[in-house]
Each structure stands twice: as C-alpha cells, then as structure tokens.
Length: 371
Image (cartoon, rainbow, N blue to C red; front, side, top):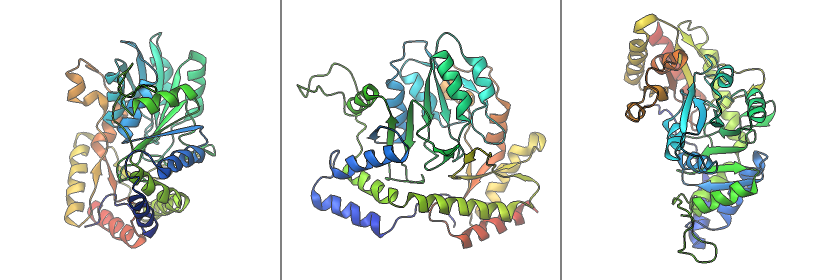
C-alpha cells in the first residue's frame, strides 16, 4: 500500500532527538526549543517565534491575541479545516465565510471586501495545500479598514508569494508541524509575529498564564500548549534540510502532472505566476460531472484503494459542519466552489518519503481507473 503522506526521517533526526534525551532537557525548555523558534522565525522573516503543541493550538493562540469581544467578526474561507473557525468561536467571535478560488482553492479575495462590516476585526487567509493565497489585496483591505491579517500557513512551509515566504506575510501567522506536514515535529505548531506584545501574550497563554513574579498566581486564563524540547530537536533536524524537502515535493508534483495531464477528466493543481507552491498535497478534482460527480470521486478512491493506493478527500466546508449548525451558524449559506471541491476532490500520496517509482505506480493506477 502506498500511504498518503508518510514523513521522511533520517539519521540527523535520530541524532538530535537522542542528544536531547541524553541532555535531560526533554520537556518544555532547552536549547533545541530556543533554536527552533529562532530559526523558523528567521526563515520566514519574522521577529518572534512561539512554539506550541499543534497547529490548532497555534490558531487558538493567534486569535487570543486579538482579544475579541462578543460578536466581533473574523472573515475566513469556508474551505479549510475546522480549527480555523473553532479558534474564532472559542474566543467569542463570529466566523464570517467566503468561498474559494476554483483554481488555487484559497479564499476568494474579491468576496472579502463585501463581507467587511463595522464589527470585522480580522481576516484569516489560509494557504491551501501548499499554494499561497493572494496576499497583496488582502493586505490592502486590512490596512484600509484597520484589520488584523492572520496567516494560516499550516500547509505552506517554504511556499512563496512574490518571492516572500509564507508565514511572513501577515500580522501573525500560524504553522502546524504534524507528522504529515513538510516540516514535522510529530505534533506541534508555531506562531510568528513582529509584535512584541503579541509574542509575550503567546508565551504566557501557551503556559497557563502563570504569573511572572508569583508562579501560581493567574491574572488571565491560558492553556497548556507547550512544545517539548524533544519535538523541537526533531524540528531543528528537519529545518536543516527544508530546502531539500521542498525541492523534492515540487519534483514529485511535477512528475504527477506530467503523468496525469492527458487524463481529461481530472483537474490538476495549478500554480499562479506570483506563487511558488510546495504542493503539500497533490490534489485532483473530477471535472464537473453533474449530480453524480461526488459519487464518482468516492468510487475513484475505492478503486485506487483496491490497487494499493491510499487517498484522502478534500475538506468539507465550514458552512456544512453540523457542529456549527447546532450553534446557529451558517444557516442557509451556500458556497458553490467549496461544495464542488468537497465532493469532487481528493489527494493522492504526497508524503516527503514518496519516491519517483511510487509516483509512477500511483499515476498508472489513476490512469487505469479513469479509463
């Protein structure tokens, strides 16, 4: 079976994690944690890095920096993971949705302006499956309306927008280092920002907001979102070869495109002229086949599974999530592009451990099934 997204780990990762264990600094302090935060912030051209326990935690911490009041609004795409909207509702805010671009699958920037109201506090841009969102128009809107621009770069390690790395384009950015990400710490995440006050808040919030002078004195409530020094050691080893990993991902994507471009029933990933995608996931979309397209995508996944190829479906839109419906959110809202992608899209094996010979096998299986 060819797995969807297996990470590539090597001797360097083993060496640094073992060194961390031997040092005794295995919990939430140590030189690897400091180095990982510093180097990842530098890599993305940001001042502060604050490591946390997951990408979901990073989003939670980022939204907590806004200190939302009940009813404050944050605009985000419907086509994303639930962690994005959940971070907003947790802090008393109202998620306001827009649809996504049919080619890049990132939020449709033309819809954002129409959704801004006097209660809007922020826009959350999500770089989807390794392709950057179109950030300049969002930056202009945020500056004109006095909004915070949150950048969810959880899937975009090393991706670039107009030659500037994702994660360094917003006021605050969030990364995930889950096992299937381009850079992994097993579990983990990070917040990046240039603001000193937000960095200080993030460091306190991830550590239960312990008092600085009296440890078990709490002026505010936080969470236990600490990353361990062992996880950071793994991250440092991965960061040592991030350019190599990104180049491999791009090469695998190019190989998929070459082998699948003759399959006219599939829409393949795009890359805008201003973008350098990392193709975190190589997604394919069944071209519009009417009401039966969703069933065809499910059937495609089943037939590939029978041929030893794992796949995963695309995200289901936030406006179709029962958990949010029970909260009274998004009633009657429709986002046609998001709905099409959710029903007709899936991604193929895309892990950093994937080899060219396996790309050949997957592409051959896809072409066979689609015929």
